[in-house]
Image (cartoon, rainbow, N blue to C red):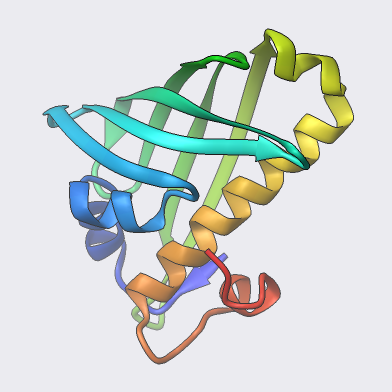
Length: 154
């Protein structure tokens, strides 16, 4: 995904509690425990199966402002989950940033009974919504390609 903001600006947004609270889908609040450790209260779901979860996110392997590894876990009444991902921020040569990411996730509990493919699709949709919201926040008035692809939804 490409956004019309420099990697330094995107990096700062990814570490800002208020920004995170506004771009994480289903977020009710984010608490900063340290510069690289956050807790969040989120509602997540697949179809009719939704639940409120406590999430914990840690950043490591920091290469400011180019890349970071995010490791997270969630727990709630419907199950647990965890995963990690690598986010990369590459200057596009025109003052913007190309955002790349990879992730792996594991889910357990009642919600896992829904099926792996459905959960994988839901995870991709939530990650897409997160980056679309980040693109909108970084480029107010100029929706990027990812924001347009997701219809401006966050």
